[in-house]
Figure (cartoon, rainbow, N blue to C red):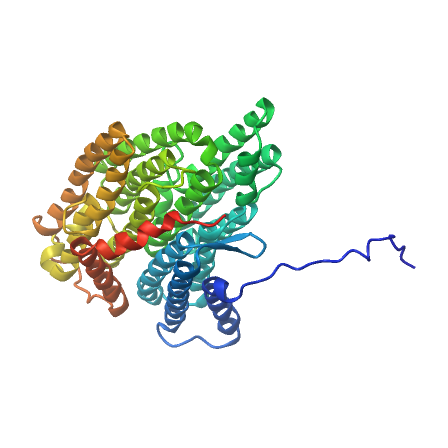
Length: 509
């Protein structure tokens, strides 16, 4: 006989109310992943590109649901979901759209890569959708524990994806390096959450803000929260590949399959920066004078180190890896600018500029790595500068697409990259952070040499005529076309996107 604890059974359990429609983007991504895993395991091999089609449909549905939710947030205002565990605001919907757009493009590139390598199957696509779900949860998290769950969902999927090419030792090495260093970063982040909880008695972002609004922190409590803040910045600094937490990036980007590298550089970075904004700007605005100098230093180091080291590389994948570190520095410029107005009734341009940069850079980097993957296919996996020589003569359309992406990454006007860089620098100037704005412009000038170097090799250098001229696969070509068209359209007509981004400062907590 089991003992009965008096009063225990009399206590009522009140389940949180679940707003099913508001969670529809997450359900679409999770549903697509489960469908691929379950149905894919119980049926024979599917026809060509059907796994990718399911992934594209799932991510597109999630993005469409986010747009519908955006309209509802605009009409009714921001709110919270599932007992304040998730935020229902334009910030979350904007991030969801960014993640879904990148996932669609990566799925199109992956379809050709896996089919050519005779590795087509549902597992890789399911991992993409699971990682995308983690990134969406990170952007919508209104609780530090929920944010950590989203972070681990994203990270674990990326570890598997990095090591997914079992035929290449470089891929296995990349997965191990990412897993070991990522585990340390997650430990720092989790310990930071514990210390913040110790100082505020809550992990809910709204309750943390309310605690600081209604209490004067004692000296001991203040030290605990500051220590937790420092550990949170270390964990997030690793995830966004900011210097000096960038050491994993070049090796992991180069060793991973190129389609996975594109996914890490887009979805992984978008989710990590969304989490950084939620933690620093939304949850801890009262400590902005403490975390802004740290972000300033990370931004400057990332801008300088990323730009300078990218120039001396000879492998294009490794160049783009260091370039992504430099881009992380630009995004951190926007985060630092957002810190000046954190917690104020009228927010500045920091947060909108960061989210705009994330969307534009996600499309840019997927397009860039898609071209790298196609060039590597023709050269037996070689992605050095030598492999790009004569690309303009062999494949002029592909070289033209690469040129568009490189010009955009350099910040040339009439491209989306100019809109992105102009946004974060303008936000820094409006926040009177003139020094970091000047450093960012100098770093952009240095990085321009990198992109020009690749373009010169593609158009002006003579290539090896013995290289096989393969036709560009349909799915990858379509992904490059979509990314290039978006890059040019936003560069010429950016106002509608900038107006949409201006609403992200009305966040829920």
